[in-house]
Amino acid sequence: MSEYVDTARRVIRTEAQGLAALETALDNGLAQPFQDAVRLILQATGRVVVSGMGKSGHVGRKIAATFASTGTPAQFVHPAEASHGDLGMVTKTDVALVLSNSGETPEIADIVAHTRRFAIPLIGIAGREGSTLLRQSDVALLLPQALEACGTGIVPTTSTTMTLALGDALAVALMEHRRFTPEHFRTFHPGGKLGARLARVQDLMHDDMPLVGMDAPMTDTLLEITRKGFGVTGVTDDAGRLVGIITDGDLRRHMQGLLDRRAGEVMTRNPRSILPEALAESALAEMQGSKITSLFAVRDGVPQGILHIHDCLRAGMV
Image (cartoon, rainbow, N blue to C red):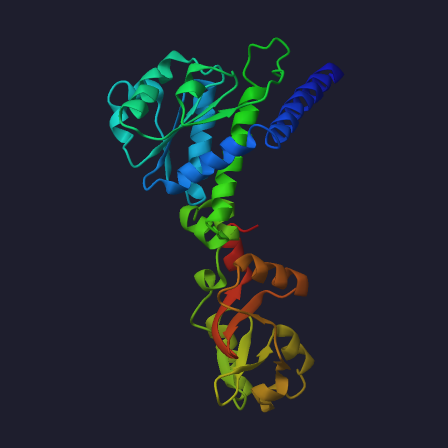
């Protein structure tokens, strides 16, 4: 079994060396073309149309998806389908990003020719200097020479890893230029754990909060706790500001003569709270760290809603 692990280490080491070479290239000849590629995409009023065949196509789909989810409109066009009508998806307002390790893949010829015919900006990524793709491109991104991890040089491994990393680098550079925020990301990625992590408290909180006044009899307070089902109730002053909270612990501490008391006598003052605009992930961390199950969302002292830890669980945050 150790031989398999040795192979895994060799593959990872070889691909890491390729990435290191790519980083070094960005300190040298690749720096200016990379900056030109970013500027070309920023100047476009349309989309980034990504294309590539085979393994380059699979990498291209991922790059297009990363662009699209980080604020750069993008789509993938299969080069073979492009030759049969999908070239209509590539317009003069777009930028084409074409991938080919050899730079000579026959299937990309039509989409490259289409960009030249209609003066559509073309960014090419390839691993062979002087290749047709790079010579035809407005911006040529040449990958550094690196060994493929397969050991025979025939299976795209290190080359596809470098291409993917370069695509990620373009996406992140564009994202940072546009000051793309987690809230923007959530707009494009509302589902799954990533979307859940970026949800706001106000997206999950309940407006129908358990609240009583400071002078409320404990009989009414217990009814409010039971009716709302959160196991707690907030306590407000005459101005509607949250000044306390009553939990199971408070009830146990005041069992003696509980029903003869008022809410203000039983409550814990200055309860923990959070802003409605805060990330729900922060609220979850607060509840877990404080070992509590509910948290009021408060703005300017006034409660806006209540979040229960089960709301975070249902949203898929854990």
